[in-house]
Length: 445
Image 1: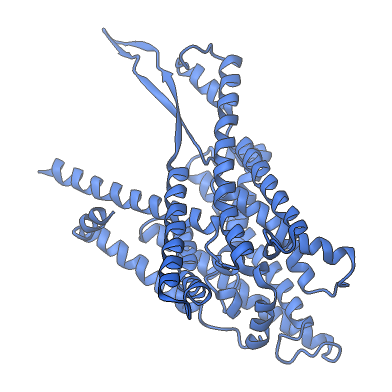
Image 2 (image 1 turned 120 degrees about the vertical axis):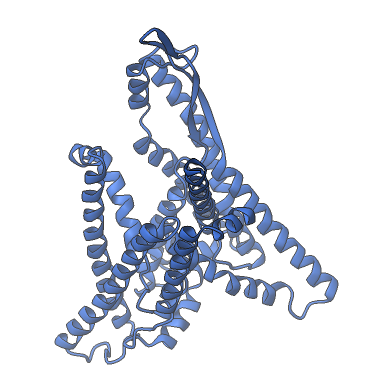
């Protein structure tokens, strides 16, 4: 990694791209510190602490912007949601699928639709947040039961527009990083937001397990924390880079008087085919009702409160309340389900089998057509299961440590997978640019 960066800095073109990316990152972090003046930040911060882990994941991917209620409070989450929706719609609707296959022009059209959908979602989320904050008394000038309808509508629209503008600006900055910087801009912004919370998390771990303790105990606790974090990072690296290669034999063809082809190849199946999507889907499905209920008044002894306690991540793996860990079991099952579901709609064995047949290629020992499809489905099922188990391990370890030891951190399984995945892909892109630059220089000489 260090050698790749060192070689990249020697090339002026790549150095300019790195500096451009760094400048954009600085601007993102500055915007994340600018609060919206309408919101009573102190009151919201107290509410945020009382709710525990209900907003922890959302606050992590926004880089603390949501807790500070800054102009970037929504961050790029509307864009991520829009991208996932468009990806699923592309498979569901043939017109969008045809548009995607049109090449660069089709992808630009889909990207434009994604942008419009992002703005719409941002506006919807901004209105919902403004109404929720106002009803709880977190907005200056909005006194529940006293403020007039006109003032409420103006306040909601004003705050929603600020949040929407912040999200749209981040989307634009992400696209500029992709075009003029290094790596995928949206992923880079997401990575920076998550990393910005790490010092806060490690300070919290120090306060919890090391401060005020005896020196041997503090050293042992520090080593255990370091070992667990490093082990998880290494595990995620293997999970992200793991590939099952299915051998493919290409047929020989005559080109003039020469016979070409016949070489062997492979179809790579990533172990973690669905990436971080299953965890995001599972967390969103379980935590959304908890977030909504936080703005409502529920009876302490009612069934609504009991259900919310089961769904709340802060109550899982708690030895004093074992029945609430049913929510953890539901979470695990949802991750496995979404791993199979998302892969099934994004990976088409029938299409791969048809492409192999058209090109005259085949999997050794498998006849073209249905036998190839059945083999790919069987192999895909095994790979998905291994990846899903890996996702479950990565996602529940922080939850177990939080429930048993009270080690509350934001860098859970989702954050680690995002960090490792983005860093690996960005370094690969930088390395490819270095290789391409060196190759061009060699050819010119």
